[in-house]
Image (cartoon, rainbow, N blue to C red; front, side, top):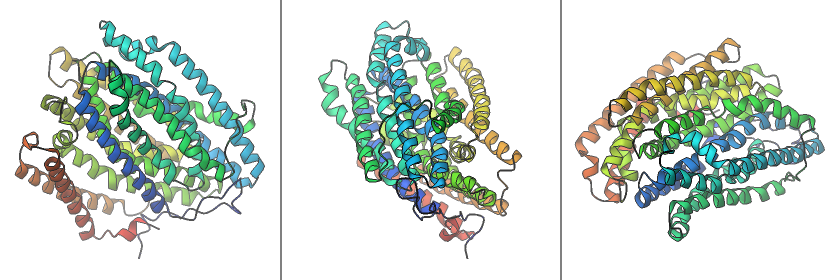
Length: 542
């Protein structure tokens, strides 16, 4: 017998599959999440290979720090214009038009939306290229007294900024495909990005006097290839856009109104990372890199579970809202929260317990020293505290966007960024002034605590608005989760103590092997503990 506390309603196809292509496929939320997560797993594996090679070949500090800042700024805007703000505002309006059953209206909306997005992002890219030095000064003020490093950062920023255009249009295509229940191909695009970056390390970087400049060109090429992968798929659905300037189009203006608040709220984590980057540029050389590599490890569970859940749940919730199904809407939010916690709590605990072993296994080769490993492990330990909250935010924010409410998440985001700035200054400044090694850990801890504040605010707003009515069994759920995580911690710590100092393990295969054994043992104990307390796989699906 299934557990009603964890069962989501099934995705239902729109009547007659209107709107220029098939409607959402008849599949459960769990299955869609698994498909998305499977592709994301491939991306994260490729990402680990990319990060390992990047750390080994280029190390930390100097030109590599310059590349990281030049990459992080357009990457932040990608979350704003592409995966975050645009998608959150676009998908509910798209589904609303689809529900009307007017194929011509849907295609017309897509055409005008694509034209408007392309025009706006072109202007932003032009401004970014033109004012690259000023933007660099804003986010790396600590390098103003290092003119060569500052100029190199601005130069690479001019190369990476046009990536924003390709990735924004790619995200529009991905949102259209996701709205029809096609999650696999869009989820594969990060794999292509990572493979392109790996190729750039070997074939482009050696051709430049400053090798990381080749990585900047790799970012631009990766964006073009990702767009080229998805654009033909829209043609097969009859939904490939014909670009039309759409600023006066009614639904496009509606998306714009919804999008303005989400420009901030959907990218709060990236805003916090940029705040951290600005502070890190004031610290010792290498601080920007250590935070970057820690964040890359944090992105693994977030992308594998959090982003997957958020991507799958948004079109489902928007359909529940369009159908005035308040009960189904609340149950779906409840299911998504439990799934996020089931994945997020053990993931955060695992990264906290294995911060140095994971960092050593992935990065501690070639130019990336044992000291770099310890420093990156410090920020990874601190940041891992926030993983459950980061995952919850990935499913709580779409609960508002599905209702076309973008102001409430924006309000939470404003509070969160203020808290992050205050915590970053309060935690990092004393460590910096006292000369403490690892002052960047204060930045990471502030990011984690701010993430907890953001998730708490979003959940509180849902409750206060009567949008989420917690289902029965939450007490039993927390008890099971707590006992399973305790059992996992005992197993992981026992194995880590038995294995000993990780940096003393010679060779990649040995480190990877022992790490996989430790992670698999911890995950196995966690799963067995949940099974022993009565949770069954069927309880997680419809």
